[in-house]
Amino acid sequence: MPRPSGKKRARSSRRSARDPSSSSKASAAAAADAAVAARRRARRLYTSRDVARALKRMAAELTAPLAGKNPVVLAVMDGGVFTAIELSRHFAFPHEFDYVDVTRYGRRVTGGELEWRVRPSASLAGRTVLVVDDILDRGQTLRALMAELRKVGVARAYTAVLVVKRVLGGRPRPRVDAAGLSVEDVYVFGCGMDYRGYWRELRSIYALDAGADD
Image (tube, rainbow, N blue to C red; front, side, top):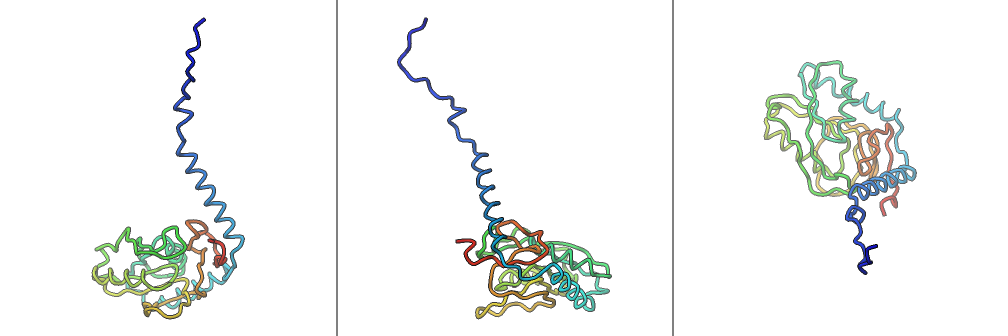
């Protein structure tokens, strides 16, 4: 029988090494739990019927200037896609669909620096464009996007947002041709707008509880 060496046997590196996937899963689970808690504490501002009526009215307002122009509906990713698609369902005239990807929020609940991921295509030159976004906040995103469209050389750019936030002071915001609903200066989600990546699919609009992100 071999004599004991007196040294402790080394643990398997397989056991001692941390599994990065377990940490990632834990973080994802915590984020999902926080999203559920935020929704429970949220205040509903507008029902799905309110949203549907607003979209129908917006489409009626936009039909006169856009019909016969073969416009491009330009959705602002990610939140503007919901409004762009739902709005387009009411258009009886032919139109094309395109998108840009620019954000100030990412998965945060406060705005930061503007981040471009996809800029307007050069193919928009000479076209009539309808820019569709989810919300007009301070106006930085829409202002930057309209400047990019001028560089591209679009013939005419119209704008539509589902929600306009009521803000006081600050720099004047860009003009919007069709707006659906207005909200106070709070963080909102649903109808394309998210809470840290969650709840874009909700068909009502909710205001985040003031203490939900403390």
